[in-house]
Image 1 (cartoon, rainbow, N blue to C red):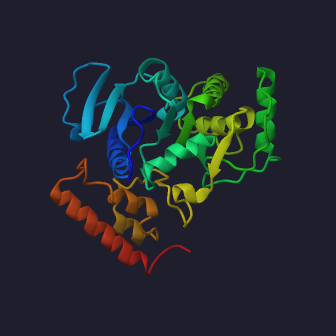
Image 2: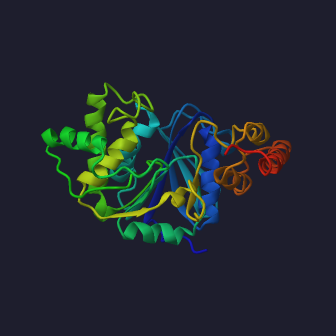
Image 3: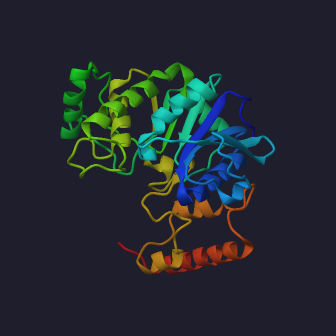
Length: 314
């Protein structure tokens, strides 16, 4: 697979706590799919044990993953939940650290890339790259969209298009010429910070509230209010339904690195496509587990798959 064109594309993510496992698997998948360049990883807390770096108090530290791939760890001090900081982080990078970028791609650290990197770069050339969410669609006449329109009007935002698709906030790819899309997303999040009395939480109230998930709802508002072209793939784009080939996104709190696959299968939930994708990306170039841990995880996955063939929720 061909590598990325030098210095033209930037990848970024945000992580804390045990999400470093997801970051490592994401980095492995990016490398295997041909990405060469820098992954900017904003973080809180401590650096990952696999990075073999000492905490120095510096704002940023580089870890060479493999030839041609580096992770730049950037300490972040925002009080927001990281899911509500994505647009601001992308803006911070574009303004202060990677002003030469041509395309920027944000990935949640529980995503695994499956397709050749060139496809991802070409995707963003056709418009802002987005994936449909598991809970999509949301019709253009949906009452929540009507509330978004009423909220945005007094702030000088008018709809550029009607949207039927509700997109997932875990992946966004933007070419520099479409950067105003990120600026609109960032502005909407700032407005929601006031509206919801802060963005320190992942979710606000229930889905009947128009800003239930501020980050993702603001992103979907942006698809309505931005005039930049969009390029959206369906739910298969994140393996929410069969037939995908682009990436896998592990939803929910039971992330693959936390799971007992056998125990989940006994509850009626066999290993998902995202679980399999994660396990395929735990060894190289970053080794996530010790040999003993890896052996057990593979056996656990095998047993979970075996049980899942005979027992599952319908």
